[in-house]
Image (cartoon, rainbow, N blue to C red):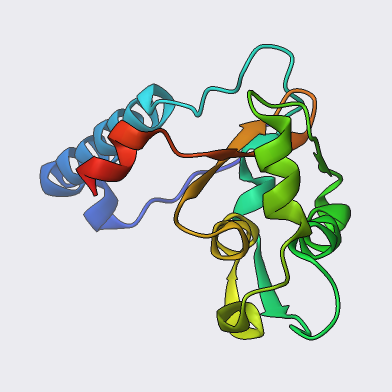
Length: 150
């Protein structure tokens, strides 16, 4: 049984046919361009999505009268399942940074990413070393030549 097809008279016009053809070509080009966009590259063995775990926003409020920088860092890293490690080039200096009291500026810092909060806690003379594969975070003192560049 053949169904009767009834097209509107405008559907047979060459202008609409050309417009439909250009729309299809434009859609195919857009899909090809979308497929060619570069994807973020993770370290070998890193679980998917781990590169952005420290970019998650959080409300940063600490009591500067109690607790240390190390305690504050542990509380920030716990929800994203990262851990702090003391195994660095200079573990004594790293431990000294983590034993300091929480700076007053971090008491009510507001909303920021976890990475920014960690940098605020450790101060300007130190840097974060992040291992996304093993989910470890370490604190190291900045080299002297890096301090001079600032």
